[in-house]
Amino acid sequence: MNGTDSKVIVALDFPQQQQALDLVERLDPSLCRLKVGKEMFTRLGPQFVEQLSNRGYDIFLDLKFHDIPNTVAAACDAAADLGVWMINLHASGGRRMMMAARERLEQRSERPLLVAVTILTSLGVEDIAEVGYQGEPAENVLRLAKLTDESGLDGVVCSPREASEIRRQLGQDFLLVTPGVRPSSAAKDDQRRVMTPADAMVAGSSYLVVGRPITAADDPIQALQAINAEVSESLA
Ligand code: C5P
Image (cartoon, rainbow, N blue to C red):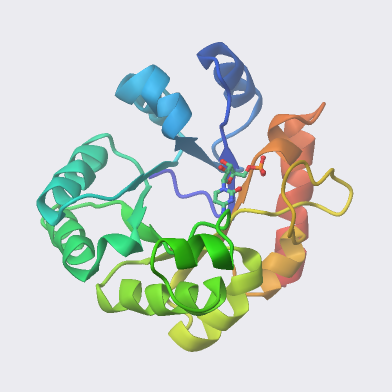
């Protein structure tokens, strides 16, 4: 783990390895962490993650595991072998699945942080009703965040809009990792309900996942530094 104190996790969403590596060369591991998701991992595999780690970056491996407890625990163990900083799973896999993952990771001398996805922000009230959840997405997010906490995980991935209520109910030690962040100067892209980095921090975010405002910027390092500065100011 490289120990940067930046709250920014840059989402590396590129179809090609070279594009990702070109960006990584321009960034700096003392200024951010990196998120590798399903697309890049499926194309490029564990070696790609190791390549990024070897350049000094802390990696959030965003594979959102969801399976029977034994399988998810084994997958988390395999992810931890890559030396990543953070991994995740779906809280809807249930208490036993989450506990199995946590218990497997706790057998290690050094382990990655383990966070859960509650309700995907792409799902609306009708979508969740169709798969058997009652009520509003926000109520289910809170219920699953509590289950995540009871299962001993480190936190959840959530919308910055959900952050303040989860923070209020689950306390200061629970990690909140929030995508959907846009500096006020940046385009919203396809994100609908966005918050600025400062507002997300004030709402209780622990880490901000930021993709295109950095990855598509003419000067990615300058865009990153501006977000780091905004975060520092909001924490001061
Ligand atoms: O480019 P942008 O900042 O929108 O990228 C955000 C990243 O966070 C992407 O990797 C996206 O898949 C992820 N994400 C998200 N919204 C969620 C969960 C994950 O934007 N609710």
